[in-house]
Every structure is written in C-alpha cells, then in structure tokens.
Length: 326
Image (cartoon, rainbow, N blue to C red):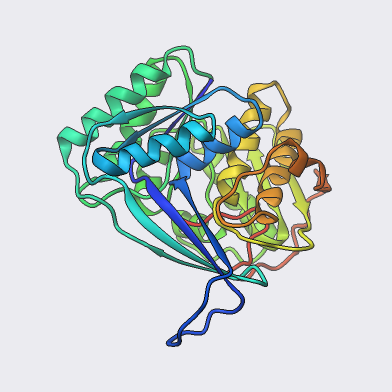
C-alpha cells in the first residue's frame, strides 16, 4: 500500500487549443477535468497500474462530491478531511505541439487545526503502508512544518516516507531525513543554493544530500531524463517522447512508478527506469491523464550507470519526466 497526502488538491481543468494566442479569443479543440494535486496524481497513476493506494486530502462541500466521483472513477481509495473550500481549480492550456501553460489558484487558507487534521488522517492510514508520500504546494497559512511532521508521523507508523515539494517546505523536510525526495532540476538548485549546470553537478548535489541522511534523491532533468542517487551509487535513465501531448502530472507519474517498483523489490537503477517510463508515457497523453499498462508498453527507456556527467542543462527544461507544481 502507498499512501499519498495532498494538502492543496485541485480540480484540474485542461483546455486544448491549436496555438495559444495571448490577448486574443482562442477556440478550444477539447478539454477534460481531472482530480488533481501532485499526491492525487501519484495515487491515480498507481491505481491505473493495479497498485494499492489511498489518497488523503482536504475536501468539503460541492467540490468534494465532484472530487470523490472522479477518484472513484479512477479506482482510487480516498479519505477526505472535511474542509469546505479546500479544493482549488487549476487551468491548463495545452497547445498542439505540447506546450503547456498553467494558471494555478493558491488554495484555501489553513491553520494549525487543519495541519493537525491532515497529519492525523495520514498517520492513521499509514499503519501497514510501505510508503507515505507528501506531495505538492502548501495552501496559504500552512508552513513547512506539515511535511516535516509527516516524516515523523509516517515513521511512527512504520512506513517509509517520500517528499515531493519545493522551497522551504522541501528544505525543512530534508532536515528530518526522509527516505526519498524527488525534486526537479530547478528545485534541486534552490535546495542546495548553487547553479547546477551539468548532469554531473546534479549528481554531486544529490550525493551531498544523501550524505546528509536522505535515503534516495531522484531528480527529473527534462529532455535529459532523470537521475537517482542513493548510498550505493547513481543511475541515469532517459526516454524520448515522439509526440508530446502534455507535461501536466508526468513528474508525479515518474515518482509513482519509482515507488511501485521499489515496493516490488526492484533495485534503484531498475526502479528509475520504470519511473522514467511512467513519466514519459504520461507526456504522450492529453491533459493530466495518467498512463496504464498499454501506454507503458509503448515507451522505450535507456538506463545506464555510465553517467552522462558532461551534458549541460538549461535552467528552464522541456520535461520528459516532468512535474508541474501542484
């Protein structure tokens, strides 16, 4: 079982347009609404591939009813903390060439009582779980203590902990030594406070974090794939997407695939390759759809422990194993 906590969930409305013309009237080719937020996306991807998961999140009122129906349709077991207004709406505009533009609402303001309710619910569900995953942005009024508290609570329940967030929430969580973090290139730069211009720089920074007590660091590098580093070594994996559709949620699918593989006993390099396959498969799907087994079969992944350390990275990357902050 893999438990996810999404403190700032969203209804993700995706609108497809041929080319986005800023300041003009744009006519949509299609659209869809999905239950979203990074942890929710992880649970959706796991459920789509037959893995047991439960999504814990705040939701109340009319939005909770719609959210619950979407999760039920996706086969995701879930537990709502009753907080009316907690579900925001995110708008994603996807162009025919795969270019993605997002407008994310900040979310409902919350306080200490809401943080305690989220942690209590996640801890209760963590008993017997293999992994507990804290994902995404924090709602207004909630500080970095939420993910730090999740690390401690999940450990008390006997589960491993993964954190996928950014900024002070990530840096504070790292001081509590989670078993895994999954930043992208820019988030890792912010975490370590220096520019990481090459794959080699990323690996060196990840090794520094592992030496500080984090079990595994998985870093998505956009068109250059992803790397994973633990105390035993480092690995790189890459998949090419011939027809990108949308990058929304693909980094969450990478994390889901990595955790599912690790839970099944895969070694770190193999788990990375599986994670990149899930993330790349998501890029080939419209909106924030998550891949199923048939989608995964179409993706070819190259995995190596012969690391491409000299590859230069751009600051703003076109993500193959991506993540869009939710």
